Image (cartoon, rainbow, N blue to C red):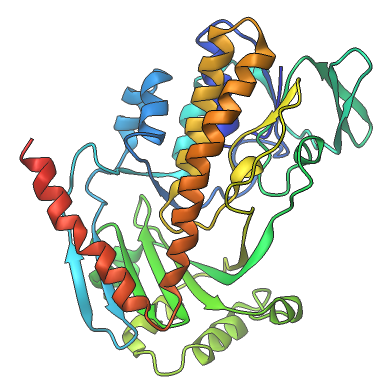
Length: 380
């Protein structure tokens, strides 16, 4: 079996298969595990990401690095008024882990020869015998009975089963990073004692989140048109200019919330948010399938993306291990995945209300449920 993409979903699938005696080869574009930043912190959910780790036999490794005390939330408006806060550390709820740490756990659980680093996949080609050839820039990378596209939003595998391509949602994230926040930027640290904060400012917003070792990632969010996106909104190649451009795009925001811009280092990135249509699905094709963002990329509101990908990897692996007829196993996996992914994607799209005229009202309505949920959990 060939798995295209070494993210959490693809690696989870390889791990589940390995624990059940099935060999798979993972083709990963990165030259090595630390070739590029993996992103910030993730909250794993009990019925998806945490379940996948538990059933893959990796719960202890996760708990060794998970941050159960980083589940706090606070909601501010653009004037710096605090509207909601909770700092409960609810063990087993939605613990945080850095993306790099999660990937390391999964990689360390696999034989090193199962990962083909530096493998750029150009295409996947059907063969007359029903198998598939994975093709790189210089020729064949291997032939397989089953190829799984775990290669993200712009999947090279997806065209084999679906003509769908991701669309721009109209939201742009500008990602900033802050180093050693507690020592070097105490004014920011005071705003962000644990977990994350959100600043709701109509069609602009901010989410800032702690990672391990005093690192913070801040995402300034804007509604922009495709024409604005093509022209360029913020010049991230010039950090000093980008900081001034960002401030100019946030008229009326309190200087307190702009401290996230002043404290940021020079690692900046513009991230257009894309999505596949809610309910994306395809007619089963023997020998090929998709998981994670390749199957159902969605906006990051709600944190469902990585959790759905890990659950995909788990459920596909379990199905393949339980049924010698791989085509039927994949067909059953797809049917179940389509249903739950549609629900998650719908919720993520509703999260786009975070950037609207009535954003504060919508966000507070959601977060006011948290104390009741925590109280209910404590009563069991």
